[in-house]
Image (tube, rainbow, N blue to C red; front, side, top):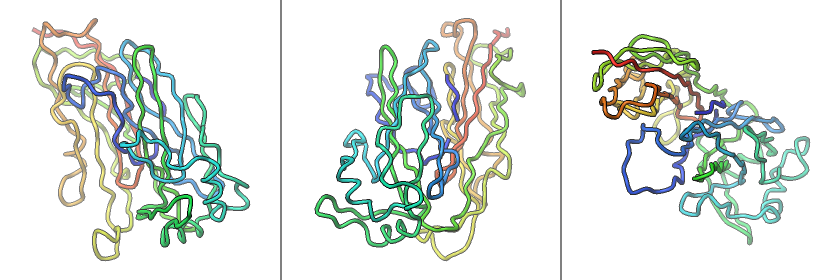
Amino acid sequence: MRSIHWLLAVLPALAGCSDDFAPYSLLDRLRILAVSAEPATPMPGEATTLSALTFAPGGETPLLRWSWCPVPATAGDAYACPLDESAANQIFAAYLEPSAAPALPSFDLGAAATAAFVNPFSAGALATLCAAGVASPLWAQSFDCDDGYPVTVVLDAATTSASLRAGFVLRLPTSATPESNNNPAPAGLTLGGIPLGAAPATVQVAPGATIELRADVPPDAAELRSIPPTEGAPGQRLERLTVSWFATSGKIDKARTSFIDGVASLGDMASNRFTAPAAEAWPAGGLVEFAAVVRDDRGGVGWIEGNVVLGQAP
């Protein structure tokens, strides 16, 4: 597993299909688990760093290639941008921030472990675009801009035996003074009360036994945010958080847990259960890799990883 850091609201990944139906939480093939932008909401002219959490079997490090599109792209079209760069520059020339960029950034963001994306757009111009949409002979579209103007970030990951593409939404500010949104950062991960980190901790557990798996998510990870118009009257509420859980062996009780203020607590979200594999399916050396990805409902993302050596208790 490879830690890099996050941002965006995650869209469904275009994962390669298989004949079996492994649980979502089981890491047994090439996966793109999360993509992040830091900062999560780059201002006009500001650069954000895109990074990803990926997994490949056998400890292989996937090769990555980053790209972006100034409009939504869909899984049904393999996240292909519906505009080429020439058409995009013609359509979006009027929405650029003059001090930020004379043209849109190249759609190709490179093949490094991380990528830099500079927001080229004027916030005020994007507000106009969100209200009116695009009505160009080259392309016409309206936009859902509840939490900012949506651009698409695409990540291709490849190993010697597999490839995968995923698309993610990055929301750009449509106001000169947008609400801040920090990526929710989990502070720790424990199995049976034992802290997990990069260096494998040892946990004694009987084959098939179940113990607690916890992610320490600080209370301030859920920030106050404006209530979206689609939810009702103006006001503020705490962000809703979701944790997605992953392991390379054994079984995790809940693939996702959530925090909704007044409905499900942070403590409920932080707690899960892990069932050790059966003796005949015991991992080599007892090594199991874990990851917990925390997302808020505005596109913020954070994650934590940890390794454990399971010792077979009687």
